[in-house]
Amino acid sequence: MTQPRPIRIFDTTLRDGEQSPGASMNLTEKLEIAQALVHLGVDVIEAGFPIASPGDFESVTEIARQVHGAAICGLARCNEADIDKAWEALCEAERPRIHVFLATSAIHREFKLRMNEEEVLARAVAGVRRARGLCGDVEFSPEDAARTEIDFLCRVVEAVIAAGATTINIPDTVGYATPTQMHGVIAALRARVPNVDRAVISVHCHDDLGLAVANSLAAVEAGAGQVECTINGIGERAGNCSLEEVVMALRTRSDTYGCQTGIVTQRLVPTSRLVANITGIRVPRNKAIVGRNAFAHEAGIHQDGMLKERRTYEIMRPEDVGLERTDLVLGKHSGRAALADRARSLGYQLTAEQLQTLFDRFKALADRKKEIYDGDIAALCEQQFAALPEQFTFAGYALTSASGATPTVELRVLHDGVPEAVTITAGDGPIDGIFLAIEKLTGIATICRDFRVQAVTVGKDAQAEVTVELEHAGEVHRGRGVSTDSLEASAKAFLAAVNRMALGPQPRLHPQRP
Ligand code: KIV
Ligand code: ZN
Image (cartoon, rainbow, N blue to C red; front, side, top):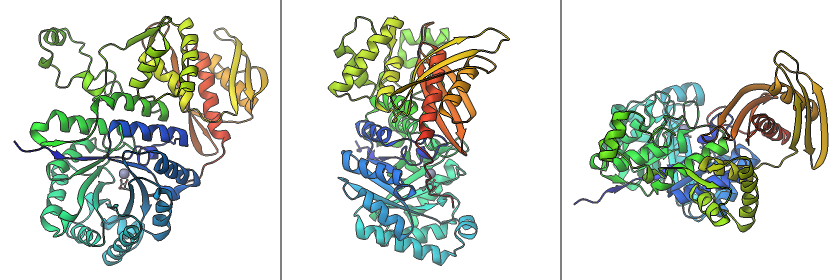
C-alpha cells in the first residue's frame, strides 16, 4: 500500500484573511487565533505583513515570540526594507519563514511595476537572496502567476529556487483560473523547471469565480505540496480557498487524492466559530463543513435513510469536524468544570482567573435564560478574551417609545470608568434613538453602513447578537454586542465600534496596492 503524500497547510487568515474589509483584528485577537491554528495543526501561520504598520509589526513579533508548534511567516514585497522588517519581526520565532512576493504577469509588469521581464527576474532573485541571507526558510510568490506566460513563469521559478527559495507559491491573485488550467500550470512547472525538486510547490487561490477550493485541489492533483488557505475562506474580495473545505475534501476523498494533512479535523468547527466571532464575518448557514446547516438532514426521506444507515446521506461524520450532534449543553445548575470543558472544546483556553469571570457571567446569563447552548458560551468567551480597551462601556438605558412617536432615550455609560449619561428625544425608532444618544454622548458622528441582528441560538429567550459597521473618517469599524435584550445588544455593538474608532486612525500599507 502506498503511503499518503503529506500536504502542508499554510494558513493566511491573519494576513490575507485580515485584508477582508472591516476584518482588522487587534493583537489579543490575533494571538488567540494563532494559538487556535496551532491546536488545529496547521503547518505554517502567515501572521501578517510587518512593514504595513507598527501594529502589524507588533502582531507578527508577538506571534513569533509566543506561538510555538507551527512555522511563523511574515510577508514582504521584493525590496530590502520589507524583507529586513519581516526578519526583524520574525527572528525570535521557533521556525521563521519569510514570504517574498513580486508580480510576474504581463499586465502587472506593464501597468503596476513598469518593469520588463529581465528587470522582474533580477528583482525576484535579489529579493530571495537577501531573504535567504537572513532566514533558512524562504517562500517566493510570483504574484498573479495564474495569468503569467508559462515560459516566463518557469524562468522565474528556476531562478528563485537557484537563489535559495525553499517554497514556490503559485497565486491565482485575481481568482481567474480554472481547475484544468491550474493543474496545467503546476504540471508544467514540475516538468519543465530543472531544479523544481529543491522546493515545495504551493498554491494560493482566490474565490472570485467560486473556484478557489477546486483550483487548489487541482493543483494538489498535479503535485503541489502546500495549500494556502484561510478559516471560513475569508479574504480579499470574494475570499481565499477555505481551509476547512480543502482539508475535508482531501480527507474524505483520499481515494482520489492519496494525500493527507496534519489537521486535527475535530478542531475545524471551533476554530471557524472563533474566527467568525472575532472578525464579525458570519458563516453562511449553508457553508460546506462549518455552516449551521451543513449536517442538518431536514427532508423526511433523508432522515429515514439516516436512521437506517447514516452513510446513505452522510459522507462525513459531524463529530469528525467538531460538531456535536446536539449542542444543548448547560443550565443554571451546571458547574465550573462542565463550563470549562465546553469552553475548551469550543476552542477557548482558559486561565483560572478567566474561568472565574466566565463562570460569573455564565451564572448571570443562566438567571435570564434557561438553556445555555454552545453559541451562548462562545459569545461569553468572545466578550471576555478578545475585548479591546474600552473607552466607553455600556452601563444601562431607559427608553419610552410607541409606534409613530419619537422615542426618548436615557443612556448611561462609563467613560474611562467615570459614569456619564445623556437623555434625548430623537430618532425614528428605539434603535435609532439609542444610536443617536451614543453619538451625542461620545461626540463621534458616524454613518451606519450595516446593522444586523441574529439569534445566537434557538428559542424565544435566545440571546440577540447585533453586528454593526460604522463609517467614520473614511474607515469602516465593526462592532458586536450580545444580550438577551436586543436593544442592549445594539447599544453594546455600537459602542464597540465607537471604541475601535476612539483608538484613532490606524494607517497601514496594503501589500498589493500602491
Ligand atoms: O493573492 C496573492 O497574490 C497574494 C500574494 C501576496 C501571495 O496574496
Ligand atoms: Zn492572496
